[in-house]
Image 1 (tube, rainbow, N blue to C red):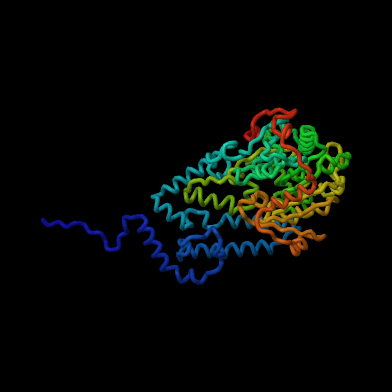
Image 2: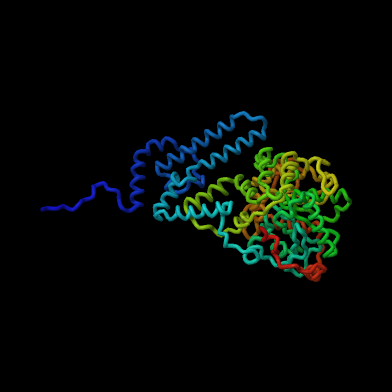
Length: 532
């Protein structure tokens, strides 16, 4: 009896999954190439979401171009839709733009060809890793942007030598060790925002603004705010203003100096402006020799995309989310992520979940994910009084510590820095501080945004900044006549600071942390920065 061996059909699918995948793509490519050719130029060729040769395949090019057409149509409809006022229109456009970003085919494992190819090449291991990343993030309640084990406070981040020399229930005061034989007599007290950790100004040694200032011969102190818990549920804006005044007085007494330089970053800069107004009203303005503001707003009329989250519905949601009088910092982090959804949400979804990539070791993203909790009472009043009602810009509309706040009474010499691409504190909004303060001020426009525009050390040789000493009435006029300088603006600011008070003293005695009347409590970075 004769037998025959079974033979494979001529066009059998190859056993190699990658070859099978390529064969399928070839088939669809032949079918769809003519159609795809008719729908070019609907997506920006520089769009980072659609980079890679796989996106040029007719099937995925058609998907990409179809998405581009749909996105264009949705935004056009949103532009044409009726709205009661400009604020409502901005909210509509923001919401539709967020939806358009979420709809991108790059965000789905079924329509992202780069993720599909990686899944085939790894026999599905990339998807399994991505699923594990997703499960871990769900458990954390927060997107992971960087390797959580890559940085350790005091070891490879926030390493500038110093001591905690003063402490309250709300903050620790860190005094940094001098590295030069002489220092400016007038010390510098830095107030970072309490919605983030202070070490944005003390990242790796190469990026540390604090270390740079110390090496420039400045006696540096910084406030490290405590992440809120139930014990701080009663804290309001008055308490942060009182804390700033307390820190100023503590440093003045420690070093036996009449005044200090100050820096306020973001919300702490907003608060510093109110602090200066209160000191002026009390006849104590001379306690602060100069004030520097990093991306800080005092007039919120043009406060940018964050205004889209200021309405009764959002405020009610915050009230519902706040437990024990505390606002979980993860909710605020999610809000900031939405402002740059493609960069801070969907690119992470693609890399971590679809591609199953390992986490990078990136100090800035590590800091960005190190969230702090907020006193809910303060947060709600901040949103309502400042963002919604813009009371800080109205003389006497707000009071703190029993004193009406009038920013037009601020005559302290001020250095006002804004980021040209800042989406949190737009330069146009920061500029308005100049319209309220009545003392001498210097405005500087830095390249980049809310973080990179500030944390730009000279050694990086990145970005640029613009200055204009002419008396101009608007930001547009400032830019039109501005001089551009490549690189970091820090040395320019150092020159301005020295001009305010050039006298120097030996870096001995109380200038050494713990050697004066305030003894060291613990080494920097302290314990408050580690509270969760």
